[in-house]
Length: 316
Image (cartoon, rainbow, N blue to C red; front, side):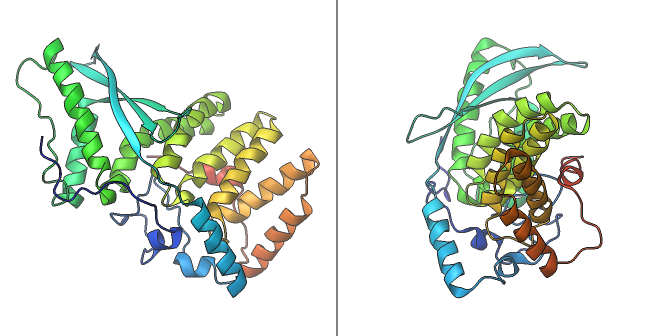
């Protein structure tokens, strides 16, 4: 199988501001290098400049020093661990188990997910619309008229799909695209947020705990994309009366937001964190002060609570 002409080995991730530069707040037109994992936009409404507009020069310098220390070289390996034949309502199909691990060290959070051949086929169609030139040398395993369910064909296709994912991941603009990240995370996140809306917090957490680590690896170039999922974990833990776990999830979300005071999750998250800090006997005063300062800079008639925001994610 030929290597893709435009493939590049995964490298150092770039600063968040670069991944947001030149973007618009419209959710319907994500750039090829800035994926959007859910139906809602997760970016500041005014781009990267407004998010840092209230910072002094010294604060900006410290902010970017912190950002550079947080850059990580992330490389993922894909395996098709197994495959099984299932009977659908109309016809039978093959379900493939994908295992994703991070190289370089022991990965205790390896991701395990399942996709049908038709899911891979849909991914290929979507990528061709945006990245036709970039993936022109990436071979997609075609469906045959006969013999798709023989052990030999399934084994051959497992190897071909593993190679297909690996080649896509080697292309920077593809691995950072909405289409690629959605393929690997959206079904699970959609189920998790559906459970959250239904009040099934334990089930939602079970899914999020498995999916968020993979989402963090895929979105290491733009951590703000993981904020809705982390906030969903906060809401689930809080409503299950686990304030310590909820606070820990909120801290991760705040770290992803960094200095993005204009982000729509920022104020509701601070409010939820201040309340949790009070319950836990932590420093809630500083959180409350940050919230008040944010509200002075960006007054709103009636803001959403954190739960009201999270239940609107992944509706479609």
